[in-house]
Length: 191
Image (tube, rainbow, N blue to C red):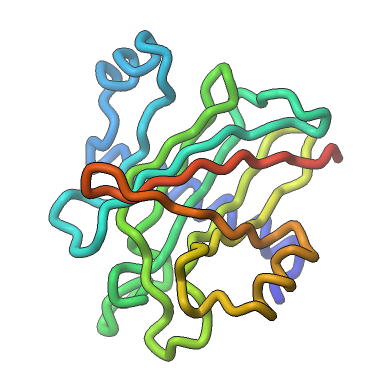
């Protein structure tokens, strides 16, 4: 288990790395972001390009403050494995997950990601999941894992375990037009 101080350092480094990668990849130009904002939609953060093997997944939600109100300018860091259950190719020289990104919530507390559906780790002992780390001033950092209801590795004991805590959420993805999607709101605790 990572200590609180190391978690903060890791989160800060991951956030900086994700922002740099997103900017370098040109994933959201100022024009695209402005167009989405004017249409009333939050910017879409693209975690991987169309060439990434796997099933397309779009997920969105809102970050809520400790009183349940939408929280603008919260940071949502997301990362997950590829379609083979790997964060990086076996010969990679980095431990920073390859499929990752950071969204900053809009004025209505909304965020949105475009990616692929992750796979379970190769040993098949843990359900496929997405890691989220959510931060906002005057709130505790929220670490989450999102599991998928239709994953055969999400057993009844794991469902009970997830229901008894706040760090794992099981979502019911739906398939529309060839892409999977789900929505999940995240409520933070005040500091």
